[in-house]
Structure formats: structure tokens, C-alpha cells
Figure (cartoon, rainbow, N blue to C red):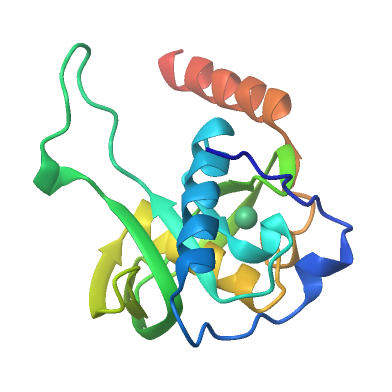
Length: 181
Ligand code: NI
């Protein structure tokens, strides 16, 4: 288990285009394991290789919902994906909401993304897959794939919408109070 250093906004590596993976070897498998360790350690739902300083087209995603207390999520409801050389081949609809990034810790901004995407990728065993995702999974796929082309969500966020998570919590509290009154 290894927790890697997550590069932060302003680091030039986050602006570079990543190269496709040609062979899935032991080094790639180790990198993927380390990416999961790093993502879970930071309580993230997705991580792209350039965020840990590797310019390869690899992302890991885990948007498995939290299980009810004391229970475990059944295997068929786990939403964990290792995507090598992923490509969005279809997208539709629209969702607008806050998103954050492990490369810009403690901040969130409003980004509009497709509600539904279809992505094609190679998994860690070298098998090719097509996956359809909606909601959070679709948002996460778009966000992580952007990293592979050197883009941060802050470039897509609505002007002035990027705020600290404390400010966001305050805002949501105020909104809730307004709704209740
Ligand atoms: Ni990110």
C-alpha cells in the first residue's frame, strides 16, 4: 500500500495531455493499486494518473453508495472502475451542480456536465468494456477524463462559483433555512 503525493492546481503536470497505455504490466498494476490507496485515503470518488504525476491515460473511480450502518454493499452494487485509455463515445442530457477535486483540496465549483455518458475503456485485465453512467458516475467520468487532457474543473466552472467547502456548507444551510421558513 502506498499513498502518493497528489499534485495541486498550479502544478504544470496537471495541464499536460496524457499518453495511452500500450501494455498493462506489473508497473501499471502497481500504479493502479497505489491510485486506489491514494483516492480512498483522501476520501475521493475518482483519481486520474496525472494527479499523481504520471502522464498516462488511467483513471480510477469508486462511486459506490454508502451502505446503511452496519451493512455491506452487495457485490453487484459496487461501482468501482479502473479505466485504461477511456473514451466517451456517447453523451446526452445535462446536470448542473457542485464538484470538487483532490488537486484543489477544500474547494468546490458549479459545473454543468452531461447527465448520461457511455464510455469505452480497457480494464486492468486487458478486457475492453463499454459502460453507461448517469448522475454522479457520469459527472465523475467526465471530470476524470478531463484530467487526461490536462483540464481542471475550474476551467469549466461558472464564473465566481468556486468557493471553499466551508462557504458551501454555509450556503446550503442558509438555503435549507429559507426552504423551511
Ligand atoms: Ni479532479
